[in-house]
Image (cartoon, rainbow, N blue to C red; front, side):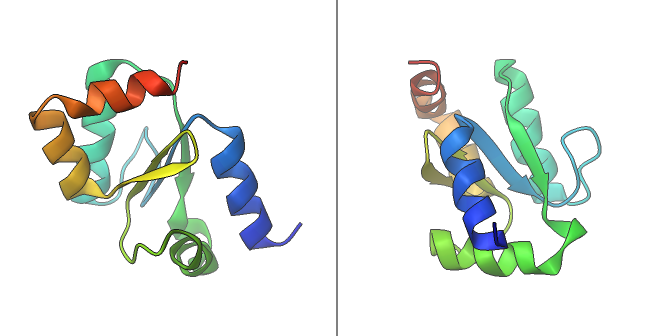
Length: 104
């Protein structure tokens, strides 16, 4: 399985997945940390993928998603967005509804 196939498989087989710099235990970027803190606020389980382990992950991920920046949050196979969008959805109360879909 090549890297692009692995990314597509990971996104489809994990109801919530966050591509980030670092890990959820040790974020290595303020934007990634912001999304981790929001997800931790809801107490949900999710898969994290550290894009710093292989620079090609960012390239193939952005080709797949059409989104140029990291982090990238996916719920049920759909891109929610990066840190700004995730934060905005959290602030206006819509993120919980999106995350609830992951459990349905």
